[in-house]
Image 1 (cartoon, rainbow, N blue to C red):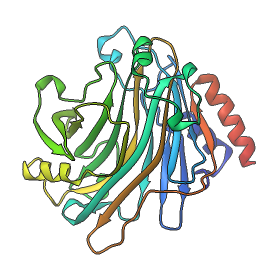
Image 2 (cartoon, rainbow, N blue to C red):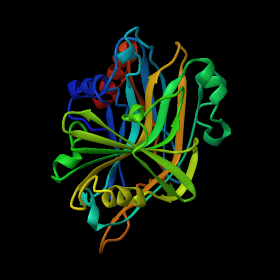
Image 3 (cartoon, one colour):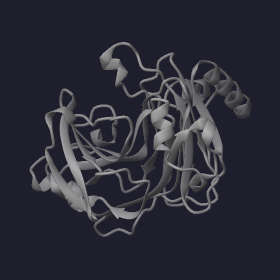
Image 4 (cartoon, rainbow, N blue to C red):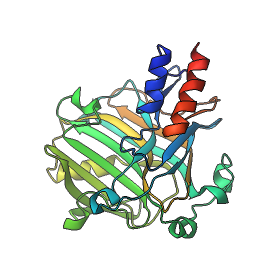
Length: 306
């Protein structure tokens, strides 16, 4: 495991900007992202890569405040996540034979749980509601007719999200226009919403009928086939980015902790062996986005680099 680094100034950039960290196995790498892409001066987020013997694990603690502006009140501030760096990406949709994911996660007001204990903590909906927590838990995929562009998370042609939880009426893009379809995946009816994130980029969001905190070897490829069958995109479209994490919107001022463990992802093109996102014996570390936190993190990371 190593942090992406080249100098002390690069370390400061990593802490203050999107704060990336890489873990490698013999087969591939995964990228952990604090990703406070919508950060303002209202709060902070700190993300830790956890020690884990049976998969990939991380936790994040955050607090962001809502703004008076109704538009910014619903703004996503950050998306702490783990991203696959599989050598099989990008891959054309028509060439994928498996897209299987696994994860266990929990979320709770930070003062009520014991960080690092994973399953010992619960998804405390009542406690999160009491502090006005607004967040979601999603798989996030980016796609584009161009292979290179599909690896760009900023402006590819398509984004496909699979929502496992939506707190405080958090809504996917296109929710106001009503459902654009639905698909029953392993007995659960996922509702499809469709909308434009920005000019030239369409977001397809599959919303689970209820919160799903644990899934093992869930094959989500049929959801992509549903989009192909509906002529939403061509089967020659490339999948270039695959992520799992939590979008943080805001709370009333109290901290929220999200923990995820046992994260695995298998993206298997035709004629290849599976390439799982699983890691073993991972050494833990952490990093933050915030004002004081960023300064301390940059100093600590810089000291480690020297």
